[in-house]
Length: 193
Image (cartoon, rainbow, N blue to C red; front, side, top):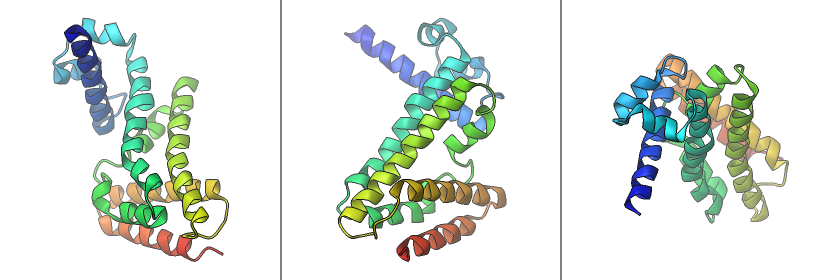
């Protein structure tokens, strides 16, 4: 049983370190040796779990990014006031890394054009992200917190605004640009007919 736990811990450590280094430095600029050194793991252990750097990156997208969205947005979906809870969450710049940007957005910028495997995994991650927002909006519509409308399109719009606001704040090193964008988004959604 202990070997299985150690194996699971090693794999998770590799994924966590890979996520952080890809997020901070980019996929192309991150060598496997860097990940191994930070994780304190031997190369053989890496290849026990992942056949290549690409497979490791795909696992980061499919597992770590998905886990991140689940942690951040499940509470919004199950909230008694999902729209209010969503607005509260996205209005707080501390809930986003405005220095490094959006981890999914950064990976999309770098990897989406490299090959179909990356594009497919990244699209799935984006659809999942939008799906959490869509579920919250549908619930908000069902309880009368938001007027009826196309929740799917609105979710895509919200995710796009959040991503753009993060990118703009990062570029300018000015969180006020993020706050202003989110405030306008909230006003727009609150006045939907």
